Length: 278
Image 1: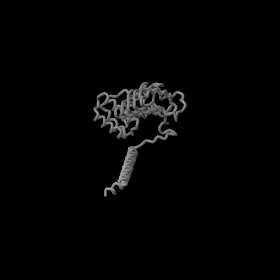
Image 2: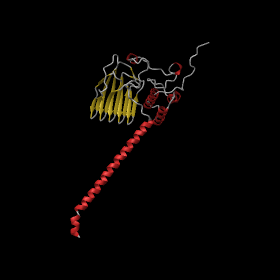
Image 3: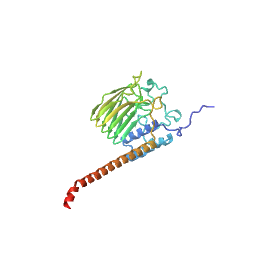
Image 4: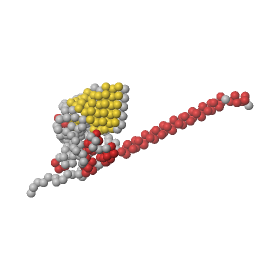
């Protein structure tokens, strides 16, 4: 009897947020390369975020060449079609320069839009982030690092970029702000962990901002991060709309009362003059 391995991929497996983000990153690269137009990109982007399984994700990049970042879904990339997993011990030694994941694209650009890098991805030795009238998020809590020291070069022009690091990572902020700022939140800063990477944040912010915050990895003890669902966002937007309407109504009522009061005062002031005319 022969020991047969899996004969086919497992497209029924549920896709993770990191899987969806890898596909979205490949689609963004395809737009920049001229392989997709904006209409196709928007259709595939919407489908990617709605996908629940590998079978739904795989067709979105089937006609695109593989990128250096491995931006495909990953079905069949490992034995039995199961995506390659990150090292399980979680030590910094296993996350720095291990080659399990090739470095992702070295540039992220948001022009009146946004970009996001989160989940399991590999930070290259030098990463360029540009936000012009837009926003970007770089989450390094679950990331691997191509080298022990990485440089994130940020340009925020009337936009914002947030960088999230886990406790224990050494961060060196060197950026320059003109009517803008490079901020680092020291409230949750922790001593540098042995073997942890060093992240250098540099660049330029004009009427914009670059912020570095420290948060516990998702699911870890002490983490208070909660994923906000679409329905939570809709409820929050509804509350904001109601608050705005209520504030507008109150301003209008105050203005009406002031105008009525001023009208009465003007009428009282003219009273003696009216009696003389009569």
